[in-house]
Length: 306
Image 1 (cartoon, rainbow, N blue to C red):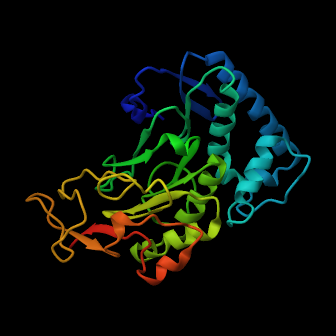
Image 2: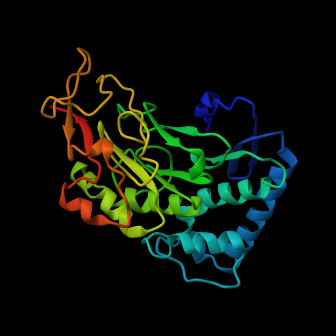
Image 3: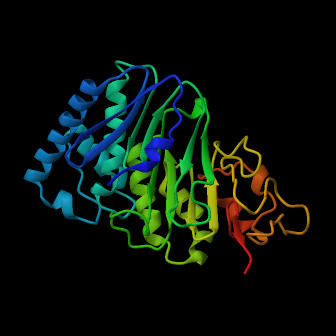
């Protein structure tokens, strides 16, 4: 599968390169080319994972949390820990875990590093970064950017989809994207949340579900042309929804002041502002769910009328 989105990555001042070993296909950005070092880290962690699976075949196949094992290698422990309380199997966290373990290993050789593994990303940068969001055929695809400030680094940004790619999903969302300090946690949580979204009504609950998981900094869910973002500190400084710069045909650049009717364009039709008017001014804390009393949406949903 050609990963066309990699051609759109803007990494001025960094060296970008690919390392692929079996199913693991990484795109790395670092201060200098580190192909051998990256391959060694991939082989090391894959060896740990494959050996553990050979001894515990159910680790690979289970869709339920796996029992904790104090003797497991570090990457296996991270996958088990990341998923033990959110109702998915440990392999739901494998891509995020691999990205993070490789990135952390490369820090010995580079001050800055980004590792992308099948759309799951771990960043440790000295400058703010924006991660583009691909949501398949959704009208919002590639029109959203997750702004990651320097003080939030390192950060895992991982996604799950019921309509894109070959990964198993029990839900119906075009995309659920989750931010966490642990990329394994972000990966597992994205899968768990995506599994629970069966229709647009569920978008009203996804922020609350994420808050109950713990370890989640923020995220968004996309279903068709509906968007449900939530988050903590990353929702601070962007002009529309403080973490997400929405640039699509509706022409919306700020919370509407006309009774909930957003600006529109002649081609795409009007957009509708749904949820709390405090959308762009609230720093939602996932550990404090009291905000849900003010609105069924922690930060609101923006979607088209009709």
